[in-house]
Length: 88
Image (cartoon, rainbow, N blue to C red; front, side):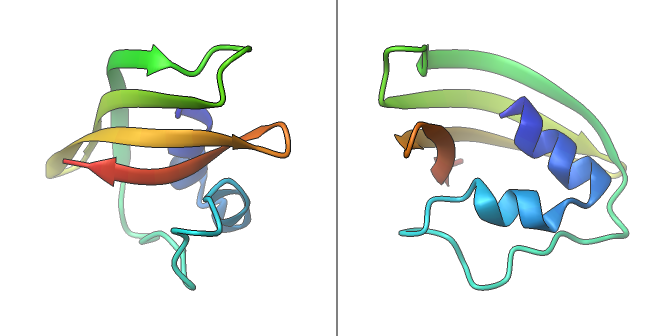
């Protein structure tokens, strides 16, 4: 989760594309270059350890003028974690 947040902050769209599960990934994953991200707070984590195949992370991502709270679902694919979907 932290690496994906960092990718949003740095505008690393290729990384976001590569870490998004192909089943749920949109065609265009480009972020808004005008967004100024100001912080990430991890609220909860379920599973997602070295022996797990799935995991969830609940977080608040803040930007100038707003915030988003989500519980993200991740799945390990070919040994790497991928973002599957989020529930607000």
